[in-house]
Length: 258
Image (cartoon, rainbow, N blue to C red; front, side):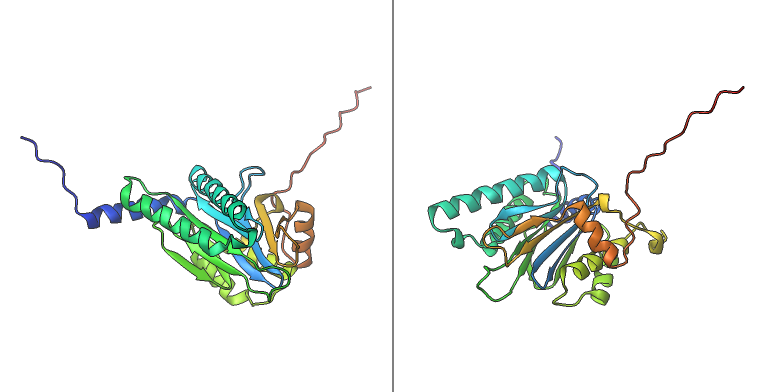
């Protein structure tokens, strides 16, 4: 008679945690930080259509790292829940805290009950209405449902330690948009593979996805920053934008020999 395989609950949870962390570590990093007019999202993302940053509701934004199909399903679920609550009650009854708690419960349930956890890490950001005092809140939700609220910045993805260290050195509350973009991009450039020359790493405009939540906007606070506007912001801060631009080489035909 074959005895059934046994693994302790502690070992199972440890294996799930390791699996989720490895999946998240393979993704490129995302920085979410507050600036003088709201919240700034900066993601290293070469894709023009598969977004890591998006809008959940009028004053609420979403950023994620990890497996795209998993955090995309979470994003869609959050939008449906927000729309339903706003329709049944009032649009101001939809809050970032409620959505963050819903995400935390969903991820915690999957982590505890399912064989495979979600390999994702998400951030829900919220700004107030124009007539309210400036106060943005960032909610970071881990793969196991752990939730933490932040007031300054959140870093998610693979190599977070050098990015966090760079932000601690350069970030200050109340930065304007141009300065905040420069700080975030330079922090992302501080990350890199182990043993690599981090000082020479640059991230071009085509490899960045940038968006904002602006509290002064009357209804929908979310706005994407176009590549042209982003390049102007980065050039103003002295950040190299040459990497990632498409270049075309034209070869003239040779003149026929006489």
